[in-house]
Length: 221
Image 1 (cartoon, rainbow, N blue to C red):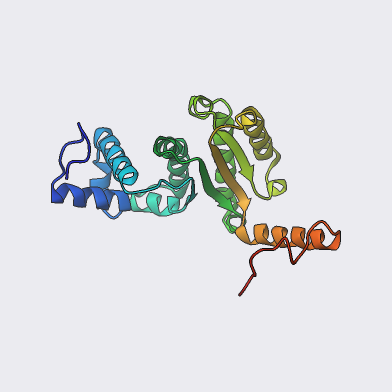
Image 2 (image 1 turned 90 degrees about the vertical axis):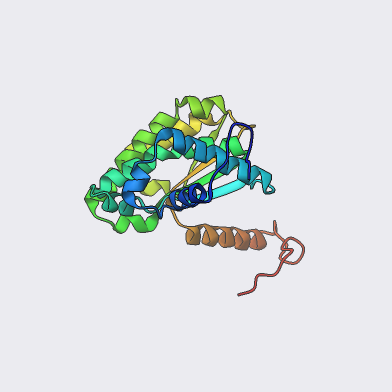
């Protein structure tokens, strides 16, 4: 089917190649041979398909996983895989903004990642510091008035990473009317749920929360 003026027609073989590329199941050499022009065309095509298929989600969450596997399949050091993943973040943000997504959350570093080797963790911290520092002055961030929030157990991070996180959040704090980019670092959903339940319990104790009237849906196992 014709997607849009200027987009052209795709043969069944082309659709299959696009699907394999998008899913990451195409052979490594085939994926690596895809030119920037084809990749840009594919992104536009996917955008048209998504927009024509219904409502675009307001909030999209991405687990930044697979960087080490990406590097391994290409014979690269796993640190290079993390670098490639970090480089893609702003590009993915641009794709999301073009589709009308209002909030993008990326899970960049979970608390379980602290269990990895010191060398790998140090690389991740260095990447985080550099990318957060770049975001503070990024034209993409400021032209779209994106507000960046770094969420997680930030007190467990090195001071240089905390400083970079504070810098980008301060630099974008005035973008209250724009899209939001949540960078989850040293984060786990379990602790988030625990904090929420603890806050509810404190609210019941101090009388600011009524367990009957304020909790509108029962929690069931």
